[in-house]
Length: 219
Image (cartoon, one colour):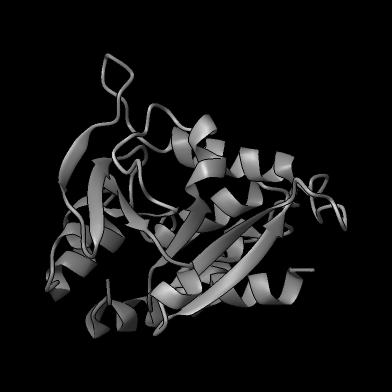
């Protein structure tokens, strides 16, 4: 999804102010990263920059064992997962008011899951896609964090919402409230930090913030 220029201007305008409020960034977990060179059980994930929004792509065959009964995309090779504001994320085109509401009022959240049959770099050929190699333990921790972001019903099943934005995709009810300091990119950063990747999650606001840190720190 290509986020509109209104929300982009709001985010960029607030970045300097916001960073001054955030001090004492926590030290990232690093015991699982970098993965051992030459290990056959290392895993590869991808981070997609959609403009203002980021998504994390997992190889489904490796992730399926660590996700709650997630069988909607049985034939998928990869799953791209992103988190965001319930209204803004599911609406196209967006409006300025939707963007302001999402940033300044804690709002309900959703997860977007898209099934991919081809390599993410080829599928998202007009977007910046970054490849990250993780240890098996780090990969499992990342998947478990993503899995914990799905709201489950009383039968421990994911709660399906509407159709997704592109290809074979769907929205799901998610845990957590969306706002300026807890947005789609901070969610992606926290998920990645659970893998052991050395990233300062408190310093992430935009998609470019996340990609810049990943490029600078990856080995």
